[in-house]
Length: 129
Length: 129
Image 1 (cartoon, rainbow over the protein chains, first blue to last red):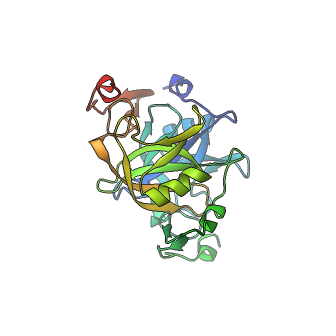
Image 2: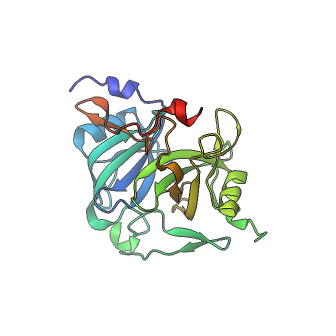
Image 3: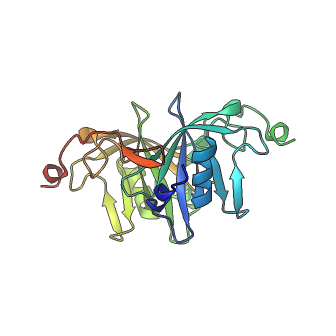
């Protein structure tokens, strides 16, 4: 496909971004949310692996490029307002979070405090060694 | 609880917002993503039902206030960067989307086009009559 009109359907922010939620295709666990620009959505669709836009580094971020924890994408969905994307992914390495946890959403609000409830699977020092 | 220091832990956008993803607590289906301000997060935690911030209307938006499709919240999670929230919800009425569908994410990218794959459960004209 060279027709990229599906990218024109997306309602980009003023910064040209769209939030993308990565969900584990097998377990349904929400792993993370990051941002994509036009190029990263296109690359994600073309390569079948999640490519985000790093707002802090202002560059394309192929998920797993340093950790090896690539996200293999099996489905891309768009919401009714065309301003949020959901990816169904296979999370290689079993962890999406830079803290070495399966999901970035590892803190639960309990009695007015954020309590960490999920274990670290792998020490980040080993992941990014 | 009158201690709202957990709200200070959240990294708000320049507009004072945080994206909130609603996930069906039983099925794991991602229903929608909307935005919350400080007051709406606090109300969601206090009332146990999703209260968003409508950016278009610039006012609090108690999900279901016009449709009856309230989201009963059983869990609130925060991600590693403290800038995204995930809600586990029971979706009353079985549909979260204003189009009368279960989820707002009803379009799948197939061969370069967004294809609607989920049925309308109830005509929006009946929902908002």
